[in-house]
Image (tube, helix red, strand yellow):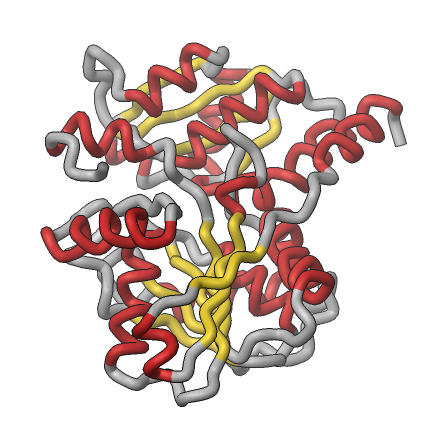
Length: 321
């Protein structure tokens, strides 16, 4: 392995993010234990599931002697923000193909990405829908030259491998694995990693941040691609709840905002309205409605994404406090 790859690997071997137990009257009255994996504390810019998803992609890029990372994302994408930050930290040039038109002034997400050196190119929504098409990808390579491609959201086999490592961390941190494992679903990569890491143990519940039931098919497809490599024998212990998307991706309603602000006041843990707010709102609602049997333990992953709050508040008027 090249010296630069070894240095990168050592840099990416971060201290495991802490596990924090939440205690309150609701949990006590229902006989439930709730643990939160604080992946929002992994890195100040490359935080949460983005650190885990990028880890093996960055190593692969370095080993393939690629100097440039190219990826796709929306205007408020956590993945764009994290990839730009990772490029700055680990010495890659970064290119972001952004869905839609450039709007000045740039929102906080894109302004940060450009500030740390990401080259932003805005593409039409029709072209964005072609991002996985081989012909379109060839057009992109003809335009930008040699690069290491990271898909939208960072989700691929390398990302799933990184997310699966979360389970091994928890085995070292808790005396006993919790009964239910919960995570928000965007592309489904994080949940796929947890499913692979648990390999049939316990029960896994994803909370979709988007409308539709496509996650079932997408996650099964992802797992089929990594099952042999990650030695996954059992993937029957999961489901995705679609009741808490609040109207779809990046949509919200006042009860979600109230929950996020109250959760921070009560627990000193910041959530955001795109993913983690919906996740914990859903968990608490299911607890109130006795979905989880008394005596159960729940483990939820805080996947970060807090950078998006600044842009959200700028658009909607400082709702998140």
